[in-house]
Image 1: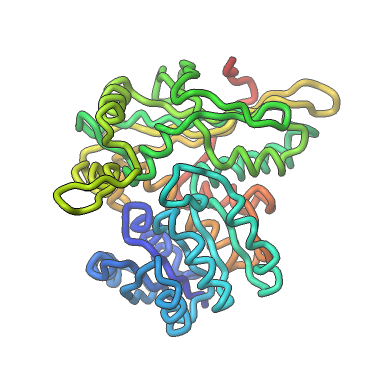
Image 2 (image 1 turned 120 degrees about the vertical axis):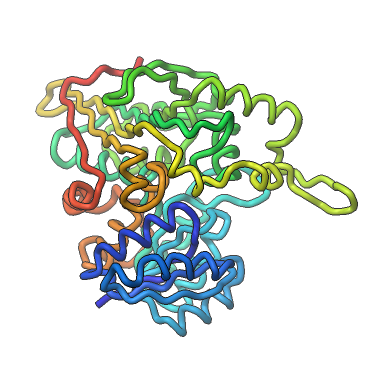
Length: 400
């Protein structure tokens, strides 16, 4: 019997909730908590007659540690699954520490006032989590998340050392809007408009936004333009995977998205610097988020597939070796199953699996960890079972 507190009620949270309810043998009880309780109640109403999982709901402000602590002390969860905003990670970790509750999230902490993506703030909690005897799993989405598990799996089974990793994130879906983001617009736009970077010989190499472009032919999607971005899992993988000389992250974008984004940047709409408007202080990017389509609403109109995976080059028994492992996910199939598009699905399923790894003791040890620091095998097995089957290619086309 396990009790999970799920904080958040957006698109990814919806997938996590659905998947926990499908997996009622592990998740016997869940509490869905958000600033807007009506969103939580809607999930409960939809699912309570379709699952053996006992569902409760609560209102909580994830920026308010005392509120979080009060909820945890009342509900007494075994784990807190954080699918709120990355700005709120540290508040939720503070509450978990005070209440001695295991913690899991899908994306690293970001300060609200600057676009900065790194693990330093959360890694600083290691000793406190160790002393409290509780586990924190960082980045159990897809990327970060499954990509890290892919790396650990490749290292365990196929390589003595991995020298080069390219993480390729392709979304071949079409939602029909001229411009919309597939996950939280505020986070998405901050991420793609920031400078790119990759790790080469132990050092960060910085690039201008969208400076490095490659074209790749993705299985079941086709040929797509992809661009080098900074992504947080590079930081942890460079530390945890043996033999790394270079690690990069690429994401696909269509020309329409890039054209609209450039226009919005040029007129200042992607800025996170507050401005005064009619006597009130507003953040342009937050206003833009309010007028863009809600990513949770894209499910019924998105068609096509995603393809996300990792290409490895390294050595085994002194011989050069290549390996590519990836998942293909169909937007419409995801919507039929859980009412979301594939971007939310590919993040929410691994969050449930990561929580299951902790609750069943497979990934349970005091401290703060990234997913690649654990045994990848049970997670990889669970991906096949819970909706994200993976494919292996031992002679992939490499990215130059």
